[in-house]
Image (cartoon, rainbow, N blue to C red):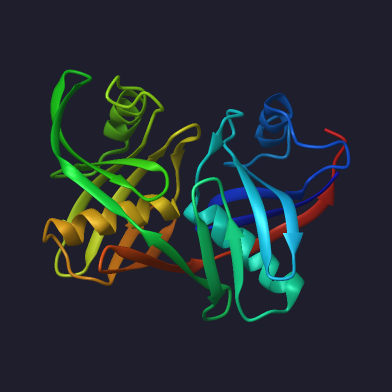
Length: 255
């Protein structure tokens, strides 16, 4: 099977066109994504259909589950399709929405991610703490936690506990966030089905939407994660996202 490996601010994905034998299986996805015994990645993008400037993409988490949406994943798929098609605009169809994308600066892609819904403030009892959270729906679920300081230890402790909390029967992505007005939020990310990641596009959109809705920041919002910054613009409840997507390598595998 031929694959390409890409990353978006250190968030790595394998991209494959659907194998001749049909759809990938969770066990094979886990094997391919394994950093020690496979190729290694934070997820896999399976192109299940393509025509002209549109590709249908199934988004796999490294644990073998699937995701409705990935901001970084769709940006990588868009960068690939822009290259393959030679067109000035492409569309990536995921389980939950259609993402339109155009080239930005070199190695940059601008995506239109559509409507983002911000929920009410809630309080959860998690890992011995009472945490204030704000939920957001970008096409996949998110829980944004406002913190006074960012700590990786806190992320590793709170992230999995919030992801699997009974409040979220389908699990959720988690962001620990510190607003830095007027236009920046610093974030640590725990992704559903993947764990700690250097960056997440949909997480950046969720945090920016919450920051604008709660008056923490004005749009456009610079979302700073360990892997780097993404810029999110929120206009009338709709989001656009701009950031990099870079190819790492191309290869074939019998895994």
